[in-house]
Image 1 (cartoon, rainbow, N blue to C red):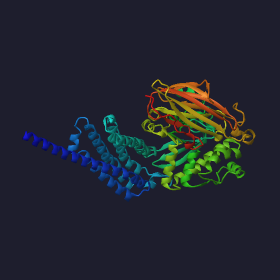
Image 2: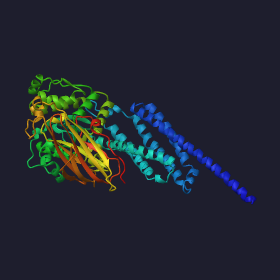
Image 3: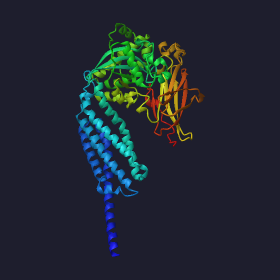
Image 4: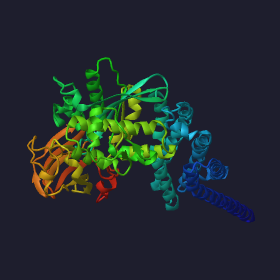
Length: 599
């Protein structure tokens, strides 16, 4: 009996020691991970401020804390505790978190910080018309390794069954998975950029890019009618403007070019007949490849290696970084004489470029060919400011990132390998593929007035989620359009702006085709205009349902369009892509209503 008591006492002592040691290790893990989290905002601030010394110091502290957490989380006793029935999975989950945190710091954060310390930021923006591609090529492997580490860590933590964990373990794990999920997109985009930019900037040979300057005053699905065109030639990072033209000059293509039959059914053969209509489709790869073929057809011997699209807001963002550009004389006697008689500004800046290009030019220059010439000349001046490194390099980078984030900047490559990488980013503007996965919705606008009245249209777009009781979600796409043109627009606005009734729309009124895309496998159920059920054009693009409604508004009028998509099988938070307009996206995109799960 006495022997049993001694054994029991020894066991209790051992358990107490083990329990105390595990508690000590748990405190170490918690303390070091919390310290690591507190350092992240400081690291981000140091990177943004380009403070190399502080960035290196914070990273060193971060490495110390994650290493200590990993040592505690992989302690032999801690690993043994993970084998204990009922509670072992909690110890195992914590171990995975500490290992992932340390991997991320050592294999992603620290290597990128080292590259950051040596990076010449000014080399990332044009200097004397050239971008040095060497730093981009040098940092590419580091970005790729960092992206892989983030993906692996995310996958490892996401696979942990959180339902079997204690709440105090599950909640921090959920936060870690969510944080990594937010980081994955930007770091993968950066990795792809590192792979793409050197070759696309001509490191391996000269490239020609067709630039479509989209005019938002006459809306198209990807932003606006591509009136002014330019060709940029890039050779070993040196950028030059080698040709300019207009969509009008290309004329009509008869017979139309071959395009995807499904898209031609939705948007008509106009997408392959006129450059001005190539982007009636929201699928930029289709619009871009069509534009490439149109330019090459009209310019025998020309080779277009890629297509870039931007709108006047992008020019405004760039001018916000470069400062104003003086327009001066255009070199065309007729144009110079014409402009001398107008009140158009002699210099353009971030505040006046949008109203000048989308409104004032039409009030003061009547001939469309001269309007296009003015657009092209302005684009050339802004391009010159960009490529001669006028302004701060960081602000220029921020301007381009902001433009891309607002969906105003698109890029397509004729290289299959490059386009495959681009398709995984928002720059591709693809209606199908990786960026259109999950509960993805799209709302796109196409002008039916045949004029420049969209400058006066204000829009809001919202998703409204409901549960009809069949186990699936139903999502209603709700769109409001308001014509803010003056009440006497028919007479006070130039005929080129109103259209003069040339396409069957009375002057001052605005006709719009609103196109809505639902997620794959969902169904387009029904539609309403101002609450009244109406017939709807129903189509399919790939495996996505597409609905089309047409509306017409007089000055001061508003219309509300609703399209219901049923049997939405995706349980992820809905994502909405919308045609960029003259408005700030924050004014257009309203928060989703009713985000409850219907499972």
